[in-house]
Length: 399
Image 1 (tube, rainbow, N blue to C red):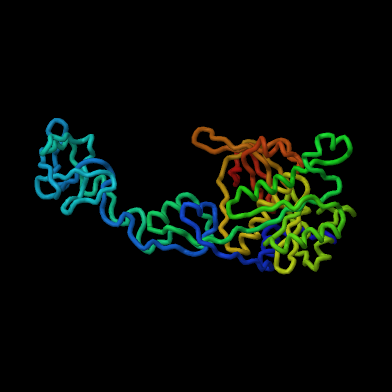
Image 2 (cartoon, rainbow, N blue to C red):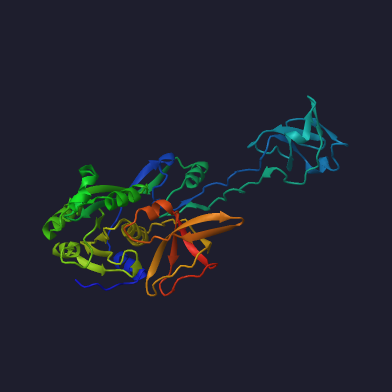
């Protein structure tokens, strides 16, 4: 099958529009739901805090009673359980404000005399007070359907009284490595002297998937460059998996047979090559509504294909909001690029004064794992842009 290099956005849409994958819903204890995908919108049933409360340890007062107070001229107030003219009430962080109070004097700005208190600092109305609904308003959406739950979602849900949360089941993805020359790491480094290759791209893809709490990644093993063997292993995997990722066998040579094997299953190859660097041979098919992503066997190209194509396509099909640590940095060295391709350059980002700066790595080969070890960012060069000059602002994804 000949390549037809689709744009990255076109490739993502080609898979997402054809995929027919659905995820079941399960209910988890709220503190076990982190990194899972929220299955419905959650609205707060209450204001948080539900009533004005103290933000500090100290003394609840009528602010007008503190007017003019200072270290040299303190104001003396009586201590009581209710606030009224000339009376303060001892409170701790989180306590509801007693009726009649509109401010809190911090403990360090007062002196407890037993049944009275000296106020050393005047406070305006609502000083050191959390107003009702200041944090979360009643009816506010605190977790949306499709969002990957982070610790702060968990905290907000708990604060609003949700003890359990509906989340989608984990996305089951099978990972198959393809290549007659590939051996598992247990084979040993003597593999290289025999013209063989140790499997590094497969573990990379598996590890990247397993970092995602909403994915259940299963290793399927290594298939030889045999269409029937590849087809058989993919077919078995699709009986249980929502999607399959193959690594290797996507090139133009006669022994790169992964796409042909998927077609033999009755799959529709919807992407055959993408205009990205690295990872041009990256392809995809759909078999009975389930996506099969075919990544390059080179580790960096496989990582790029997974991160910028396979996962976004699945996320779009399923309505999942993927989160990238994306920001803008100032380029420290000229970066040439190929017009017509979306390019992903490994780079090193650092803070320089008040700026975020980034420098592309000199070594750029798609097989060089060391570029991911030495780098901490990816510079995204959009299709149609012929690189950037030193000093340009560029979009980067932090790794």
